Image 1 (cartoon, rainbow, N blue to C red):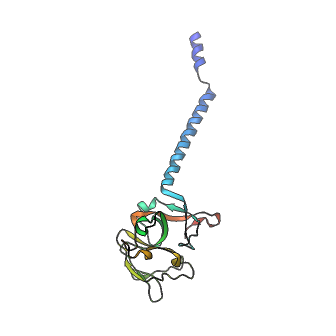
Image 2: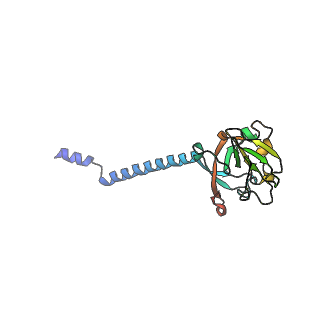
Image 3: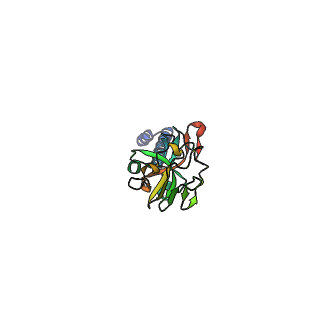
Length: 199
């Protein structure tokens, strides 16, 4: 009898066992959520703040933008997309820069036709949906062929944007290496009255 009593005395109460199981599950859940958040932060950046008016009216100074870093790894950047890239090599500007992709490798971009419009591979580029009202597509005349593996980028506020046009004489002729692209801008996270996806 005494042996049975000692065995019974050593048993952990059922309520305490349940408490330990619950604590273990909560700890595992917190660890799993932390790993998910860390993983998302590696691929999606929400805290990038727009520093200038070069992308107005699409993006305003202080807009916090959502940048998809993951899809650019398997889905090539396309004309018309807004991207964030490291400007150190192409623009001699340390840090991230946000611009619109006008041309990709192999494209010939010319400014301008007899009506003042950009052409890409001989086709007129319709920029009415994003070009800031009152701006011309470009005051600077140019005729460039984008090297393979590079992008020609411009701001939507052409008269207030230091973009590929400003670096025509630099190595790469003002184009940006695709490898320097951080991600594509998919929307605005802040301020509250501007939250939403880019058109």
